[in-house]
Image 1: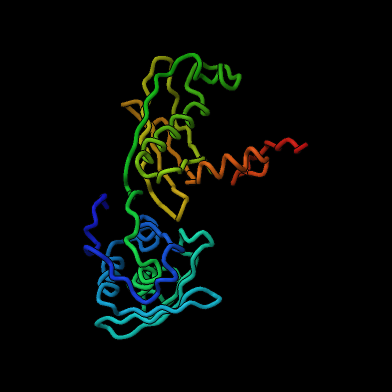
Image 2: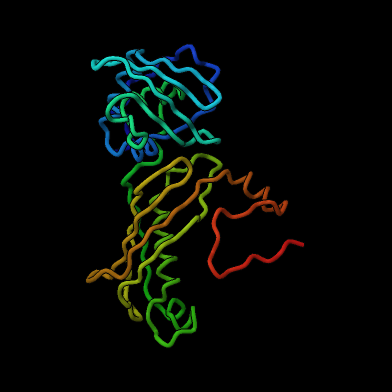
Length: 263
């Protein structure tokens, strides 16, 4: 899906639920990740644009009734605490009844609660790339104390993260930064000194603030490595403030590395 609003009407009419505006901000990429295809989103926009969805809030989330050519369907919808992702849903229609596949009625209800255009800044499928030449400093011998002058796995991992950063370029809101949550890398072939290695990262999934990238690296002749990088989008000032107060724990643990105790 591109940066345009081809699936969206020129504006979304405000309803009677103005007290909920500002609390929910689910982006288009998250909706596409959950829905897996454009059909439910297009159908949900049509239902919402026609004013055929009613939503009520309760202690467990939101209940809804949506109407289309197939009749009326009801269900429930629950968001994460930060309002950036959908935590759970269910609909009485055949598609949404199992609570694992988003239907057009659920999309219509989400739009009703959000009552604004979903942000399209993060784009599923967007790619970014990074290149490096294998020099002495990036070899296994230099970085991890190995015996061979070939590209080290830590250097390959760094290249993949750089490619992911390139793919994320332009998707951050003002004041946002990205931090790494996890990296999974398969080092498939050796790259000797002087070899140029290129990594290409693609945004594969988005769930709220968490963005997953699929990454491939090659030397122009063969695949050197592949993996997955996961970033979290954070409020930079808030994050740095917590660091200064010593109150910020990274949202990921590293096997074999024990954090130093706080004094």
